[in-house]
Length: 118
Length: 113
Image (cartoon, rainbow over all chains, first blue to last red; front, side, top):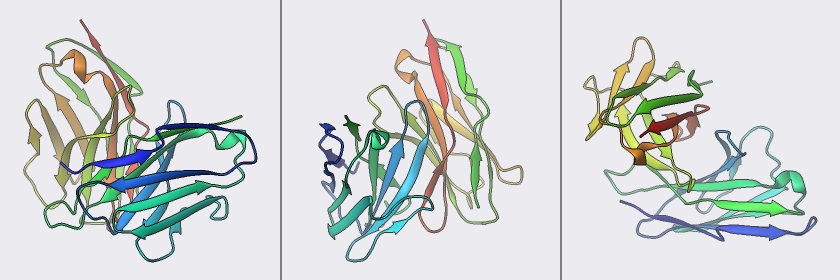
């Protein structure tokens, strides 16, 4: 099956700093990637849809200036949490939609990134 | 807007027994996909099974099968011969035409040895 990686797997940062999280599709090209946030013992909440070569589409209530998304290539999307604060501490998961026929109906998930803001 | 409801926050089953996890959803779309994802303690989301709404036949993957009732908007997951490795959080999910996946709140499944 298709593989999606995330880097870093966990990060601890000081309040006020920015953190970049990478999401890569390793063996397929993805025109669309998605970023989710998961609080402890809760479900995944979609934050934004990342489209290669165009602006990301953010879900209602998600601050686009706070969570910067860049989808620079067909295999890489990045999420930058700017001026992070303790309330931004969470588990961030990306997923990628394959463009090859036969995989289109499936999103493949990365292993997640745990962010702790002190 | 589409919604996904999982009414069982937690369930337990004896090893080797069968368990059914419930899921209902609401949508006005006629063409969509439904999924069950497993999230073990590692938190990696693992696709368990998927169902295309236009297919009447229930999907099956080894010990995992679904009971898809389109008219009732119900999509339950049956796990047969439960194994210790099946212990995890299970999320029912709906994929809309715009590719967005909406997840239910999840059901935590415990396997009793």
